[in-house]
Length: 424
Image (cartoon, rainbow, N blue to C red; front, side, top):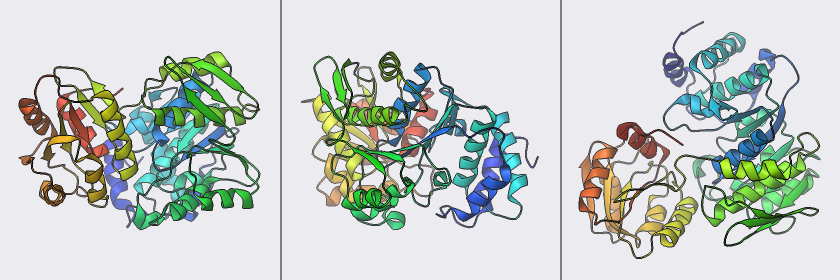
């Protein structure tokens, strides 16, 4: 084994391949064939989309676990520990298990170089196969067609909302991005689209492949009520479902898509209504409108593109009307900074900009200039730690006024680590 510690494996992987992101399936597919994991492959649900993937994986995994299936879930990025990416029955796998998988991949790859994400994807697939999970729920990392997850032919595909993100890799329009996301679909197999306005490119691609397609608003839908919600498909209707802990109408849309995916895979993995109810009630996901109560509630959200931040803004208006909001904000350089700020600027009283310990991050000074050019006056920089920025916001906020920590997975991760909070 090349390394005995997970941290050393991860540091080495970051230097192995010349490009951090290198979309394409040839290298990772060839190594996957050489791994030759034992036993039959588990059933596979692949989740693609711009926003809502993590929530959808959480719903799918919780419902399938409630039914008694052994469930592997693969997501990215992580918040506090790399192990969060690879879970079995809701628990992150241990360092030893991941290191063994990395060693097997290292032996199998020969002189083929792999990116950090490709190593992780292969490790998840290898672990799930060896642990004999019944079903693996795989979240696409970037796009779909050329993402490493796409080496697996899914039994059912769930596509969540489509927005503008990662334009340098996927294109600068919903039509271009939608076509890339649709690349995870397979000929004649079922797929679900949970975006109420799906790009025509995605629908056309599904038609070319004769996909057994279900589209929200056309083939399935949901209706919210005061104390619950209902879901219906072409053949089934379920009423009085519990509202999931992940709040917001958009989360019901994600849950509705998950239910349709489960309905389409019922021939492989039957699920009862009681398991659906239990799973919806138990689903958890850190950093999605996560509210920590207190004199000044902390709202943590990993929203980092225009579509996701627009949803966050709507939730803040609904949950904190007439309150003065203070924002602790950071964003990566490659994101639509002006678009994100435009969604939030009328809601926020003051902005606090910490310096993230991430090379890709926009500097506080860059974000300050964007904010001021957008007409924002109250902006504070000079915080070397996220927790210092939160403390400064708390010192200025009146009792009851929320502090919104948003803009990046890295921002939430640093805050959780510095503040000593656990995830979940």
